[in-house]
Amino acid sequence: MNVYFALTLLICLSAGFAYLNQRFLKLPFVIGLFFVSTIFSLFLISTKLWLNIPIEEIKTFIQLANIDKIILNYLLGFLLFAGALQTDWNKLKQQIKPIATFALGGVLLSTMIVASLFYGLTKLFHLEISFIYCLVFGALISPTDPIAVLGILLKANVPKNVEYTIVGESLFNDGVGVVLFIALLDTLNTGSFSFSHFGFLFLQEAVGGILIGLAMGYCLYLLLRSINHYQTEILLTLAFVMAGYSFCNYIHISGALSMVVMGLMVGNYRQDTATSDLTQKHVHEFWELLDVILNSVLFILIAFVLIIIEFNIKYILVGSISIVIVLLSRIIIVYLPHFVMPSLLKLTNKEANIISWGGLRGGLSLALVLSLPDNETKNLLLIVTYFCVLFSIMIQGLTIEKFAKQA
Image (cartoon, rainbow, N blue to C red; front, side, top):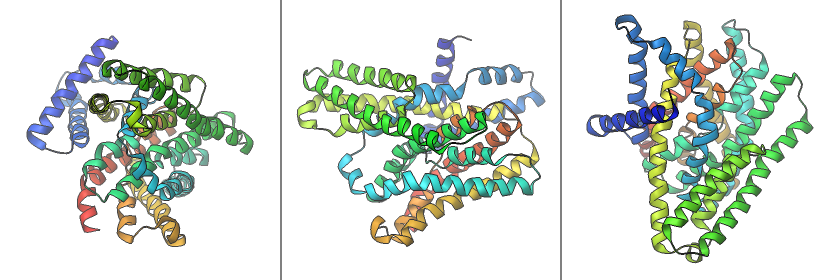
């Protein structure tokens, strides 16, 4: 199956599932797509019992498609830039203290909490898994997913200061999570851990990503300021995202953070001198539409992960209990600084409740777990991660608005 046919199939499925959702289910866009895609995946799995559909061939094709690489190497850069472009920096800046607290210390603390509790859970079920794998799971599941948050939370009508806290946290904490994941994966492969090596990786990935993002954002600003032709300016933003994200991946720095910083700069830095009102309108409309299309493809891809999972009862039980572990870690990292440093975060109990429940997980976590070396532990972590993502999108995503009203 060639790339064009695969892309055609994804777009056709996206359009069809989106229509079914809008016509009948009327769920929020990304939730509806994920729900219909999941039902379709379950249907395909069940056909081997009552239809002669080549399910094994479909499974092999999905495995060979390298969904993790599609998400991490291609989709993520576009989606993060589009999300950051539509984010108001002035409002984000007002919530910088809670954003920094949750995006930095929160991810580190959550990784340790999840790893420790998950390790105990696996021992309870007599599963042989090393603690380093538990840390890897903690690193990939702790960051709230910017794609899931931007696709769901912004439509949920939560208070604006809470909305921007969760959105800002989600835009930045994936960089910390990915750095942790890379360092732990390197430890897993080499068998040794070095704080100096970890520090170097952090500086290279996180700080390097921010600096490159600032540099690219300023260069793009200068180019946009020098012309007034919205078609060319849209092409320039597209070129900078594609080339910039590929360049960051090539030199091993955080392309995700670079795209977030560049998107914030293009959407906020000296807008009155950078582009005309007409250009701003068309640039935002273009990236909003592209965001919708790529989000639809992303949520179909992560729903199709269900087809390649090898289930067993013990792993399903561990996955179900792990949802509680992830929720508990989220509660701790939100409420610990809320009670210990109330003057720093300046959150009410209601706002802390919403932030705690609004920490959604999505495609990034699944992409990271799919990138692990093939073994039985990967299959366990894939099932556990899928359960956490499924709960996050379908339960937390659907109830966040009602939860915000009742909190």
